[in-house]
Image (cartoon, rainbow over all chains, first blue to last red; front, side, top):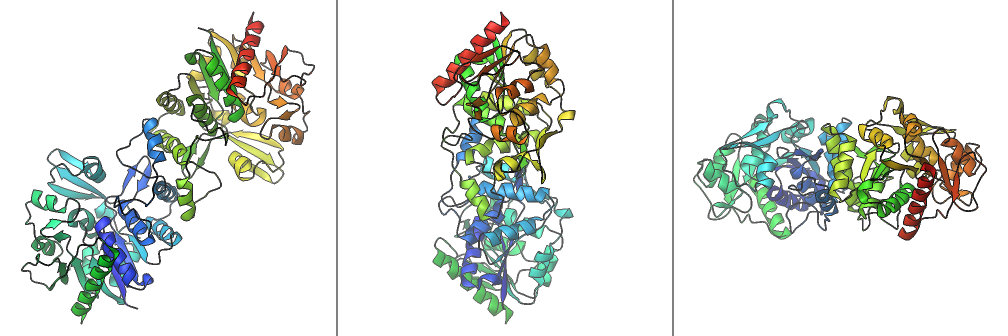
Length: 309
Length: 309
């Protein structure tokens, strides 16, 4: 069987992961999720990207909010507010179950990989959902006013501060999990897809895990990135703002350069083609409907097949 | 100001606490709560009796269930079930806020007394709600099949196992908190009330805290117990079943004997009078309506005043 590996952050990446999941035999897909935006909140370990991918593949994702669960309720937050708790990060009542059960299991020594696998299986997901690492890697956003933990920057301050750089705290001590290492080096994998996630805060933390870039470079399968830029801007989120603040050209040249060490091909939205020294394929990459998600997935798979042949 | 101290377990005790709260100037009441049925569940510290008293005094208690919050929702439990979590102990969505925030604050070193005080204040309670101790005391139910942690006996097995005795794990290392010690010895307290809670599992754990019995014996105020028996049976819960299994007479003689070391007077339901060597007052003690709760509270206060004079 031709297996496919996707490397994903949250919302944008999960859209392509869903397209791949609906296009491939479900067990053929492995999604490696960013854990750099995981954090400890209210004593609970929250893994936003893993959960977004999990909810998306399970058909539970909230299509209005873009995060969390469909039909979510908020009694916990209301009650927390009434007793003076922190409410800047909203945790839905159903969503809480994952955070509480994950925190309980981590405390008794279960790995994030095992917990994530069990949650996915329980929710009927037949793809493999993998955290990029089992130890803590925490994205720190550097700003002129000092460093900010990722969720403080992203949720509490809504990406307002100017970004001067990023640290991935703990990445130096992280290791590729056996599952991630096996997925990337699997000779039965026909394509490794870098999803159209934010390169700085969704993909770079994955690449910061020691051994990941080398594994991608050595991977038997072609590595294809889908650019998050459409019309020279990001569909959602702070990708373009970050590029500008970091003094990077707001074009797919920047994307290609970031992934250059291991990239075999780049998929861009029509009109966003750039002159780069690697195969490039233009196809509409806006994914609002499920049909658009599967259409992009099919283009990615076909492009990967051409690169491999 | 004449202050009043009540010692309470959960449901039955909270009814009288509410009656006292509505009868007295609100700041005049101090409720000392059993923490023997506290437990760690899903990694969270759950304090059922503190929370029942808190919800009751705050007007948030669920009048149908007898525990938890009015208008509670259960999305957390549904989602927890879907990922294979433990569901034998039901935690409502709003209720969870207290357990999560309490667990977070305990982990950073705040005392249960401080946390309980802050929750009560946030919810508008003007009475003092005190845990009986700040360190763990955990009721263990002895059965012919071996020891059972309290909530396994009470909730999971619904009090079915035969009881042969109780242990209060950690009680030997517990200490009276400054707040509890001050409340019991306060010369401005006009009455100390033992609420009509289960003597074995709600009141005995409080009495097991070293120094508590001596403090009650030395208290300037008269100590009045309201019997939980009505017509020789308990209104709710396993009090009568436990008395029978422990070979104790199912009458107020047993109640009087248990509290004999410090008791100054006993309030019983009409028809349940017994021959005992201490003042006894008969008045209807069934508390379904708020009017009945305040009526019992007034009888208790009047009886306490007669004992003090």
